[in-house]
Image (cartoon, rainbow, N blue to C red; front, side, top):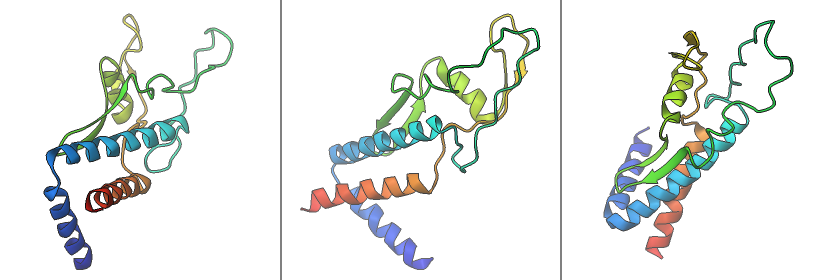
Length: 152
């Protein structure tokens, strides 16, 4: 473990030595790649731990007949609502606007009203954003490729 801490210290020093513009560019590239991976994972309907999302609740007996034709979170994962941005200190992937509240309800399994006049419903936790081993690899690959560009 001590070998990795020395590597982390050296890596932090290399990143700190970069100019603010190059750190911003690197963080933006990391955020964009992470957003793409998160979008693909949401499309597969899988949590960051690799478990499938909890299924939708059963519809009442007297509800409209037919199946639900769209998968969950189809619009939510688009670039319009899922933003990626980078600063000189961090890379962020987040939901924006009104969908941020809905995403938070599903991320943590909170209570919410599906529509204005509906009763409150307890939603299952369906983590939309999170880091897994693949995300860590993406971050490290992007840092290494960016450092290779600056040292060349």
